[in-house]
Length: 487
Image 1 (cartoon, helix red, strand yellow):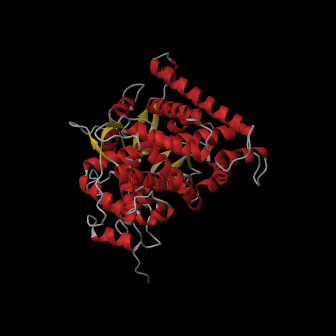
Image 2 (tube, one colour):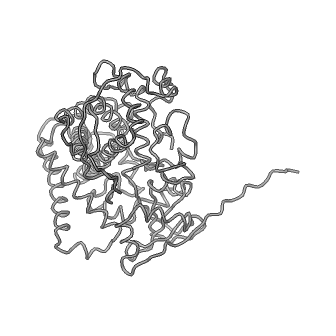
C-alpha cells in the first residue's frame, strides 16, 4: 500500500480593500499615494477586490497567482482599464492586441529583437550615450531624466526608423511621449470618460500631444515609402505591407500601430530606469565604487564598451537588474477574463479586470528580504533563489513577455557603462528622496543632478572576490545573463 502523502492544495486568502468612494472607488488613493495603496493590499489577501471608478477589479498580490494569470493568456487576455486606454493610443499593436492575433504580430517583429540581432545595436547605443553626456560640464547641473529620455528616444528611433527623425523632431517626440504617458495613468485609475472631455489645460495638452505624435509617425511612413528600402524595423513593416514576405500582408494602419507601440514602450521605461539607476548609485557609494572598478578593469584602455564586453560587465548588469527590482518603471498592468473562471478560489465573471504590480511583487519581503535596500549583489551568479527569479518580472512573463527584454537590458547596461566610465552624477545639496509621481510608468520624472569628474582606479580591487572572479573567468552559460531570462 502506498504511503505517499497527498499534496496539500494551497489555501489562498481573498478580501476587499477598504475605503471605497462613491463613483471614484479607490481612484483617489491610487492616484495620490499609489505605492502606499499597493503596499496596503496584501494585508487583505492574496487576491484583493478594488474599485477603479465604479468598476470592480481584482489585484493579484502573490507571485504564484500572477504566474497563473500570465501563463493562461487565453483566459486572462490583454485588456482592462490600462489596455483600453493604451488601445486608443497604440491601436491594435503588439502590446494591446488580443491573444488571437498576437502570434502573427510577434513573429513579424521578433527577428529585429532576437539576442543574436541585438548585438548589432551596441555601437548605436554607446554612440548616443557618449553624445548625450559629452556636453556635461564638471560642477554644472544636469537634467538627468531629460537627458536619458533624449538618449532612449534617439536609440529607439534609429532602431525603428534609421535616421528618419532629425534632432528637432526627436525632441518633439520625446515631449509628446512624456505628456501622453502622464495623461494615461489618471484615465486608467479613474475611467470616467466625461472627466476627460472637459476643456482643461491637462486634457488639451494630452490630446495635442497625441495628435502630434500620430502626425509625426504618418509623415515618416509617407517619406520612407518614397525612398529606398532600409534594414530597420520600419523597413520590415513596409515589406510586410507590400506582401513581399511569407506572411499575409499587413495594413497601413498596422504599420502605424506597431511603430507607435514600439516608440512608447522603448522610450519612457528605459529613460526612467536609467535615471533611477544614477539616482540610486549616488545614494549608495559602495555600489557605485564597485561599478567604477569593474568599468575601469573591463574598459582599461578607455574605449567604448562593445558586444564582446557584455559577458564581462557582470556587476554593471546586476546594477541594472537591481534597479528594475527596486524601482521598476513598469509597475502596474491589467488583464481581462475572457470567460467566467476561478482564481484563488474566487469566481470571476467574464470581462473582469485583473491587475498585478511588479512593484508589489519586487517589494514583498517574503521574496526579497529588506526590499527597500538597493543591493546589486542579489543578482550575482548563483545568488538569486528560484522564488526570487519567479517574483522578478519587470518584463512580464509567459508568451506576452516584452518583445524587447534583452534589447532593453543590453541598452541599459551599455548606456550605464558608457556614461559611468566618463562621468559621476551627484544629488544636489539638500536632496530628499521623493516618492515618484504616478503615471503609466513610474520613476524620477524631473531628476536634476550635478556632474563631477571621475578618477580611474585601473584595478578590480574594490570588487568582492565573487565579482572579481566572475570578471576574470566568466561562465559562458551565465555571465552577462539578466535574471528575467529565466522567469
